[in-house]
Length: 202
Image (cartoon, rainbow, N blue to C red; front, top):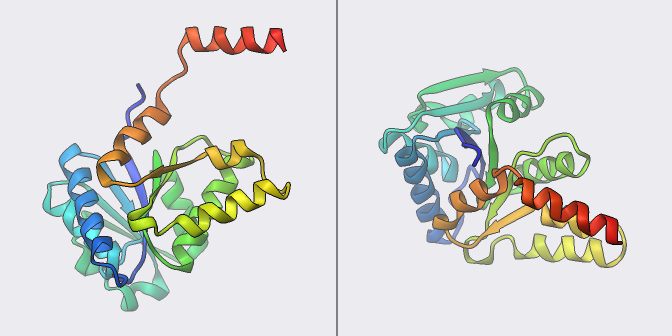
């Protein structure tokens, strides 16, 4: 099984109105710290971003925040307790560095920025630009509207089922790492032979 050493987390710079959003962010941060998996995130010390980062740091984990210059004053990176903070010149450089440093991606609840980061990675996977696992934590059904939209894209012919299958879904924090690790497991020789046999019989 492939080892995941770092996970990039996309999430809101606000806490949201459901207390479980913050609770799950803290719980996942604690999990990353305990498992010694580096957290790569947007660098802010506010909202869910700050919660997941502080929890990871408090649990002894390595935390790398990546934040563009124009957001430094607004999102208070010093409050995130990051092991390392990288300040970029713009959003494009930020996202490039987040991609480079991550073995997998997890999206917690968030707003337009979180959605944009998530959809960009899903697009890159669909276009064959990378095979890093991408997962959403569907806290209290937060991502259900997006999942319904993707199903609609498929049903009217704009998206294949394989593209939807590239997006992993976890309903609980405890399910995140097992799903990611399973997605990075190498394909066995038996599985390769089975796939070949199916293709030859089609």
